Image (cartoon, rainbow, N blue to C red; front, side, top):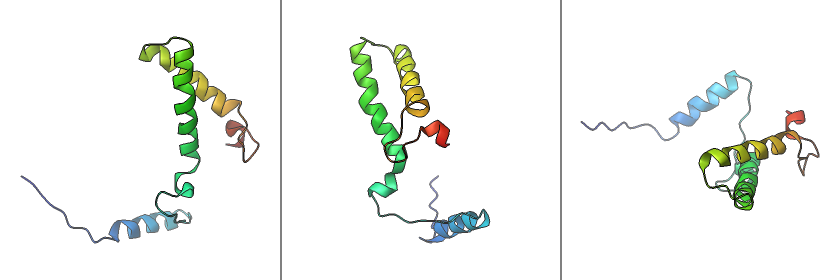
Length: 95
């Protein structure tokens, strides 16, 4: 059985805005695909995607279990020791 639900295009957005407003949170729109829409989360993933494969290759890591140790070390460094370029602060301390 296939069921198709028809929702007014803006209905989900209206509910989302109401929920945010009830929590005292403002909503800021960004253009699709723009840098401001990606934010710092994308920067963290970019760092991981550049660093982890390099370290796995350097240390000859071939299994996911071994790679997980590298990921944990890189995440620890990124969050606890590395200064953010824009804020000049360590992410964990800023949090």
